[in-house]
Image (cartoon, rainbow, N blue to C red; front, side, top):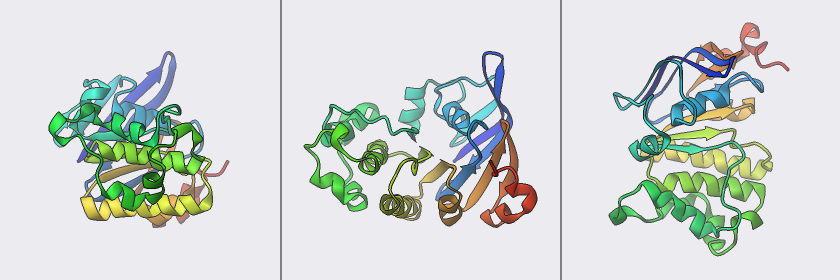
Length: 231
């Protein structure tokens, strides 16, 4: 579904990614782990088009997309839930969800009913402003807004950050449901090891802008691998 091959990315003189390769197959949760500052968010920014790469290729559904603008990647089926959620605080929950219509043809602009099965609290708060929601509710709203676009790839940047444990469990169940029911390719960046270990089918570990491990979650128990996670 989504394939990243040998990409480099730099911010001025600082190189954030060095020869990074990642695959996110359909109906699979692919985890990306690593400490702060190792390039995880830079990888996602490259995938969704928020920062250009200087080498390598990104392909989606066998089409090269690394020179497409972000809106074209979104229309193609890549949805992004950024770190910090970035919902619109002065818009209602309903209006926030409707911003997902932007890349959809007029005939198919609707909120999928299963969003409220995944996140029932949103159905009860449609007229409440986004900024009045708790952090966990805002995270659910950010994921729901991405799902309104009917994506084929869902890219999540640290969805557990600042979230209470009960809602982390709800988000985990929603991610598993989306993989199993809709065949989504899900790319999940996280620092919360247990969350990734529980959900991911495959995991990549990053350090200093490079992939230092690629495999199943059982491999994270290897001492040579775990040292890249120790602060």
